Length: 238
Image 1 (tube, rainbow, N blue to C red):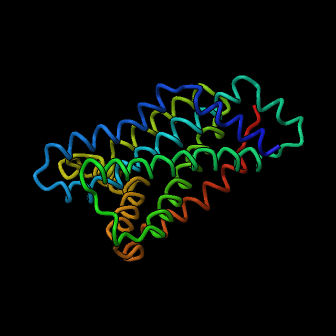
Image 2 (spheres, one colour):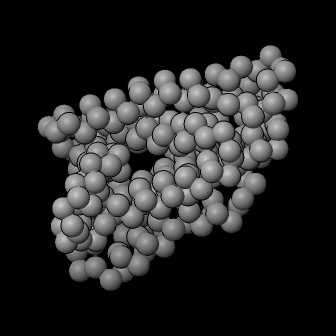
């Protein structure tokens, strides 16, 4: 059964190849453009690498996995699945590891790309910490996306909120060019969204800094616990 669910999720992954290809290809293009025009390439790599991995995470969770779940509800696949021995835990687990596998492949290829093109130095990196934080951040956005995909009864509404969530998270927080120029209330919001805490964790791991100096680790872990429980509670087969 697990193999069958993995196959299904892989098929859903390539259901919209253009959006996934664009989303995973965008970090390569952005890194190449920034790296080619930068005077200090090493500094650009150190600051930008975690952010571009974040883009891949957002694409695979909010735009791919969660929207695919909404599509599965819409075409009544999950209603039929409910009549089989496949439990929702297996459905979610197989979906989770399918996209995680794609993310890990992306990270390896993206790292090699930067080694070949920009002589990225991978020596001395704490890869246990880096992979651990990538996993933690991926898990956070996965449960956030799945919560949105399930909490709304209407699939069209769920799809709209997922798209809004993706672009909102992508363009806010550390992705904002000059958040300090925003009005106070907007600045307060952009400085306290999940993307900010996730980026801080990934950059700390990438730069070999402590992961526990601030509150980011606790907040990210707390979001995973809360929204993981809410996803299980609100999971909808139809």
